[in-house]
Image: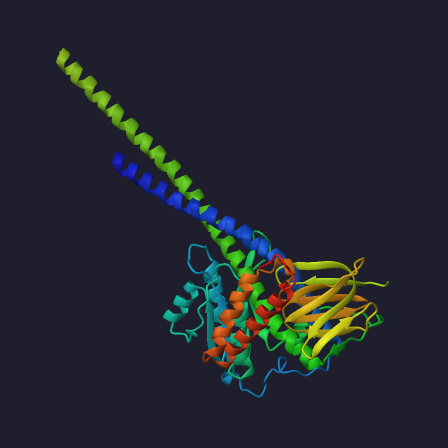
Length: 294
Length: 139
């Protein structure tokens, strides 16, 4: 039977930890509502953007453009593959970071020269420890995603892509599927894939209106594609931010719950020990009194 | 007078949804006007001032828009831009600070990419100031 004082101090320490996890839960849930609102605000823009590009591609299937160039001449092991990895700035979010890391490791195993652009402190440490090449100037936090940050990130990548320093750009992030479910996902940003936009199959007998591009198809795509990439990065950052806080919220909730269970068990043990002590004392007193009577 | 459907979507919100009589957009090689029953077209839009005449109104309204594009299909215009602002939402002081900051950075040596960034930032600041200029109460 453990000592009463030991149990008491254990209960206190669990209570302190519970205070922290509970506070983190509240912080995450308030940040989560913010992130969700942001997500809702940006969703129309993304879906419209994606829809527009798919529409333009549908109407101009023969279009040749530098952003569609798959650079097939570059051999497989010479291809320079960039991945933007969106992790959290700190842990304590359940499997959130591990899922992203696992997914990125899968990409790293494929042939090619890999370059990492890590957003978030935790991922940066993880991949630096593993000796991966990380762009050291690429220091962005994941907190409070803004359009400005997305613009900077896409600026860096677009420039390198256009100069041929990168052949493929992926983004690894966590997508919110619903308010309870989120899943780590890889998405290709560049070069654009025709098939990914051609999901909508048009019936043959429908009249397809023709669209003219002004001033030219090239100019329009030059203006749309960087916007599209920026928009996608922004969207991914917002999604990841929301799922990070969702994951942390859940992790902290279960931590608080198990702390409560622990306290419950411990307080039963504490009461038993206290009762046992009292019983023992009474027995001793009784025994002493009886001994004196005789 | 005829009208057309206008839908302005900025990256952070749906900016406007409704009917419109006339629309003038800043495009890379000058301004481009859109009237009802325009030919189906996709127009690249650059940072600048867009002007709209909404249905049932006679005066022109100015908007500061960021880069993006406009799509005209079946008498419906969808304007997708990264930012869209009304004159009354623009903070003149902030825009001025942004302009000064951008000008200061322009004077320093920087990489091409940084240069484009500052240039874009300067263009945005100047558009904001231009659009907000007509407000008497703002500064």
